Length: 195
Image 1: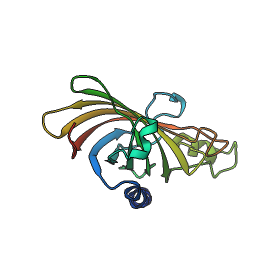
Image 2 (image 1 turned 180 degrees about the vertical axis):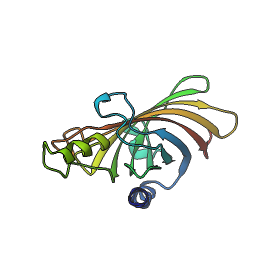
Image 3 (image 1 turned 120 degrees about the vertical axis):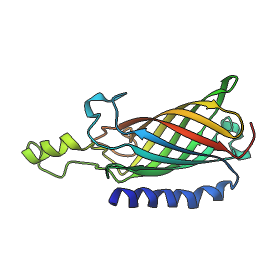
């Protein structure tokens, strides 16, 4: 319940801020992410359970982002079904159409999560060891989100994606613990604008 409430609260805050920048919704993505897998940090992979259910709303690129290659602003919510780390936030994504019906979409963003930041037990104690076995220690309540999606456009307004995302504070938003978290999943998108 704590994870769901925090994830939805962060998503609500992001939803309130993003339309002020630009109101035109371009597409919505729904997906399921395999949570905390072994990609860039295998030492801490598989410490938390359950897939994450993810919803992302992407907006038309405003003219003032033309200098940066016209990325699309987005807001996102990712809720862990086992009550582990959920998050909500915002960012931008670019789209590179490299073949007919295929695109790569890299993105960067900022999220707030409800997972663990540090171990609450004394270092070296049995309780600390047990806690570290089951929890990713993210080191900061706010994190960077980097992502890369392989997108396939279907007939009409639908598209499918395989997406990788990495969460970390990068020793910029926080210091000390920075175990990070990788996820990979599939998403279905509905495009309101034409391509």
